[in-house]
Image (cartoon, rainbow, N blue to C red):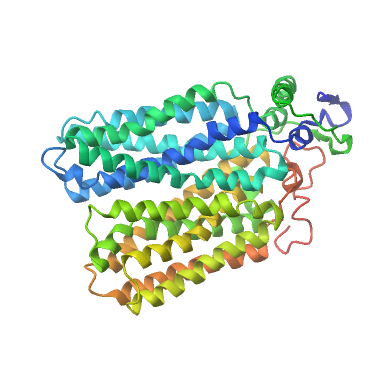
Length: 502
């Protein structure tokens, strides 16, 4: 079943995608998901730790920074994520998934670890602090591009939706871990030491995972599409041996699923734009809509969550971690309980449904908020219910942009839509922070919540009409590789009937 030369197409005939998709779930897949999926835990952890220690860094016994200077840390980190996603996303398509998911984790370890070594508040140390947060953000941004690509290319088609959504949802496990960890460190230890140890929680976890990742193979799909037929055969054979060693028998491979590939030239971001907007315009609109809407809503609510609790409900800063944990758990439960429905009921129904339902629920909550019918507890319960659905929908946004474009540009496509989402999402905290103000004008926040609801509902409606029915399909059937012989500039899944096709 090795790849064989195909003189007629000047390429190779391969069954590697079919061999991956026919695999039963095994300990190999579990180990791979744990080793790669930690990226989202680390991101949730980093953002939560940074938020939790923000007030601490303004105190004289720590760095004595101004509130504005501390607030800039989050902006620097998010900017690092955007740059890292674009830079490492391009390298992932060029150098391979494995090379990059090792490198990006190492970059994160260095950046976050060095943050704890900020020893003063002079100009030099402040620059050092900002630089380390930027580097840590670059590592995590690169992880999003490299990891989503690797997971989708190594997971059998029938499991891809639920696994990808669950993995993206673990961001909130990191948020819980960060909240609990910083709460203990900042309340049980000297503040000068506690905030530093908070930034070391992620690197300690990442260092362990780095050792596990060393034993994962390269994506055979990436290898075969880049002319590395022998290496691809070695990688898929390694995976098959591990599956069989775990006691699972391998079903036969359907020879009809063989594809013919001729390695394509390297594609940069300019060429990527042509691929997205010439060959896949409807999918580009879909990806941008889903990523922008979920990012705007999440950044708007999550980064102003404690402000709402304090300004409108009088919750003290010491008590907010309890509410944050409840909020994070609600977000975590959604992807794990309804994620399988994206593979069974289908992408279109579930993506549009989760976006529209979360938007409608937010609108109802906005009315209750304005009517004064909520308190801190019921407001938190309402948010938990809303984001039970929104979290699964947001995870599906990442799933969508990682499976609907050709393999050769997959990581760069993820990076581009991630960057777009972060740029629009960054507007959320600014807008909602201004709407919250001193808490004296609830009507402003009411209007803001209705705006967020409208954005999510709009994203859901776009998905209803443009979503790709990718459930259970091979990646090569969803988006034909650029390396595939006889490629016609469109996908079998989208087809000529699409009003956006050219």
